[in-house]
Image 1 (cartoon, rainbow, N blue to C red):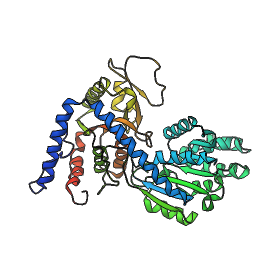
Image 2 (cartoon, rainbow, N blue to C red):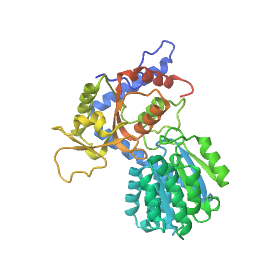
Image 3 (cartoon, helix red, strand yellow):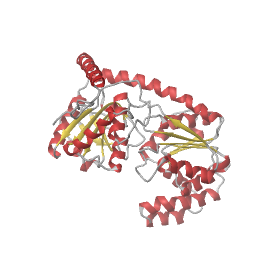
Image 4 (cartoon, rainbow, N blue to C red):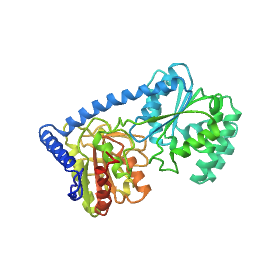
Length: 425
């Protein structure tokens, strides 16, 4: 197991800017001196408090919607899209509007529903995963039996691309139920002609004259289909007329170190957002060569976190591109020092042994956690690999550990070279 230098995991050429290198090592020396005195949990706690203030500042951007009833918000991971969508939905509900708050991912949809249920305006908001909310409408309509038959006979792609939109539109057209406002998060995974046609029926006034706010990351988070910034805007402009556009530029979720290194390893030529001012802990990179060495490395990391002062198991999520049984975490589900459970499983009510949550990076998209341990990073060469890495790394707010296969070393070194470029600075 080898620890890579987070800033320069490659030999620095003589021609490199000596001043930049010197500044880095001076900063690193100061940080390491500080770390010997202050526990990591204390640093994480301080980072969390400062990140919360940055998130609250993002709420000012909602004033853009004051004179713009239709707006497409674009922003990279960590720019506050999900919290802004939630806050905007609450504000509309407080004004007496009936609001539909939707997203693509199930975990995020469940989180939305739980957050709304805890508010006094929850009765005015229907929140959850888009396809679940739509299905709830269909099964209460006169075409429920016909739909359920088609649902059983369809494979996943056909179900989501054709069956749900078709029967959903029929059910909505047959009923009086309309929302005053539609708020959509994860728009990069939902903006398709068939879904826009359906939403056009679901909101009062249609998409041309009704009220809506869509939030999306069209950089690298469209891991369930194609998505590009020009595609989204051209689609909305061509089909639904005028709408305002707003760009979210400030990273208010991740510490500066996590935000920068996420962008570097994900293949961006320049930062997709303005870095925050919360420096935070260095990203910890651990190399592994095979399944055994990775399992040993992961066990060491989790054992330390299980006893870390100032960090509790609820703060930690293990992510992988693979399901639990195929991941490195799958071999550590029952140790003497900790337990690992799928995020779908209920948390134990009582237990003295720390229990960590596990999720695939795909399922955890749209969510976040104080501490992320990312394992099974065995390739980062293709656009799909880098997009998934971008999603996974950007989930961490204050502390991030990444387990990298040794075969990724060349790609990692090449990625970090960009930190020295004029374009990156």
